[in-house]
Image (tube, rainbow, N blue to C red; front, side, top):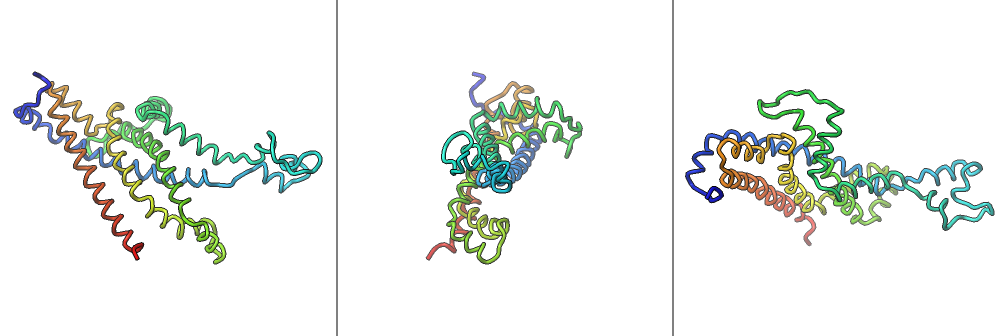
Length: 272
């Protein structure tokens, strides 16, 4: 009987409306900060994965008398196999970025949140202050960091795919006009790539809003934390969960529709 939905129970949880309001604000702020951190991190990771930084080959070209063995064997022939051949073509930036992405994508978010909070931020102590009267800084920041790191791993692949989808001839044309690589990426490649990957980014943002619920396990006072508090005070569970469901829907559904509208506006110039 206690698990059945009863209309009178909604009146019992009405006094906790402010708590749900605060949880809604925390969830929105958590998602916004996460998507910003995740996007910046993902852009750095994507550039690292696509980089052509091969330090051992660079040493072989810069100092052939000392490090030439990375590129040529004792007979002076160019290497095409073997350990030194692969070592010479080793890209540490791409390796680190790939390892980061694979590890973060292959482990549960709740484990990552716990490691960041109980591991990293047990060493790096944050001030125990409260923002806006209800946001615990020492809980909020670890939640942002953990979700941002997780989001960056997924957004990295989205951004990398978007950049690689742009015709390489545009980069060559930009170089012929005298643009540096950074300028080409900023003014030519990224604007086109962003338009191509906008639906995937929007989907990731909606996922972030929903995944932010996991941070209540470390004391972040989001929507799910409000549900837990109301359950502890009233011993009612189904009705607070329905309220939380409605709040998440009110966040995710309009967001997805807004991004779809922006996508349609951006794609008008592509129609012939």
